[in-house]
Amino acid sequence: MKINIIKIILAVLFFICVAKMPYGYYQLVRFIALIGFALLAYFANENGSKIETVIFIALAILFQPIIKIALGRSLWNIIDVIVGAYLVLSIFFKASNSKNGRTN
Image 1: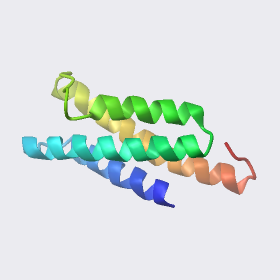
Image 2: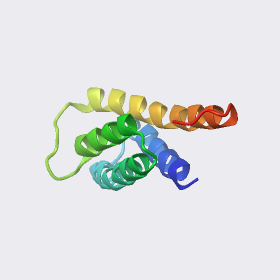
Image 3: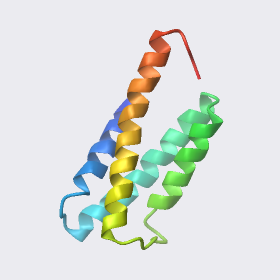
């Protein structure tokens, strides 16, 4: 349940990034994303999901606020939407797999 809350919070923050926001908001999102993805990587590793662990570590590195990766606003908007959609969809796919008796 903690995992889903983290994913929902991050997804909402990324979807809001598509709107024109003050620069401080994007800095805050980067910091929260670093912490959120680090936690998600930890939980994925604890659950034995190596692929998700690598994905979340890569996303933590991409969004970290210390060494900024300059990709331009339009490319960052695309990344924000893709990552937000991935987080939302991962909640539903995990829920449907666990209902069907499948575990990862």
